[in-house]
Length: 211
Image (cartoon, rainbow, N blue to C red; front, side, top):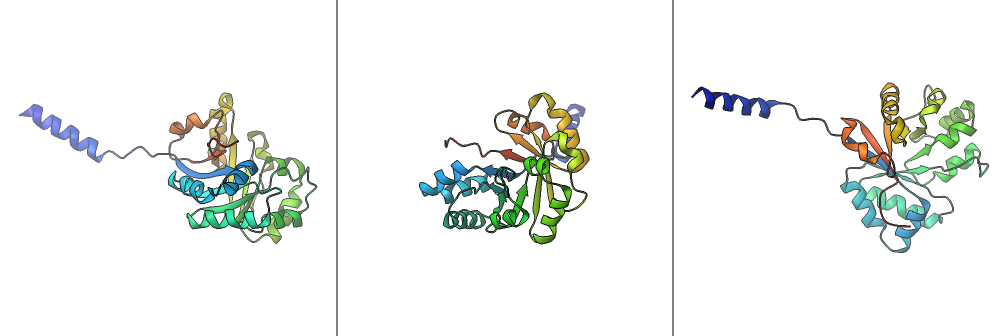
């Protein structure tokens, strides 16, 4: 009898124990070649549905040299699947982009992402000019060594690029300190996803088999 009671109590305890919080998908990136591949093959709707089915809420889009009509299509397909399309402004320094150029490139998105290339090559004053003229969300992305470059205000969301396995744990601590999303590399750190606890995470890039 006592043994049966002990078993019953143990089962009740397990039933009442809080579930371990799982990491939560946040955003994933589509590169320019991926965008061209899906658009050319009429598969854009399908890939956006797959991204949403994995629990992601944001899709970051590299639209360099992508035709305006295709940019519109990509953003529309993302929204139709309940995703927020955010334009990832890649390597603005090499294209000598001013603030007006960044705003123009993000014209079809629901937000803009400025990343480590921006923070390495543009002043804080430039970021605040962007914040002043751009009225949609700004997603900021940094490498761990750029923590001192994070603006005090103006980033609607910050992520830290935890792309190196050897420094992953210290990168996690930095992300926690900054209240940032953890960005994982499909090549090096995506395998650490189960150990993120309740943290939000991004995936760079969307892990498919396109060129």
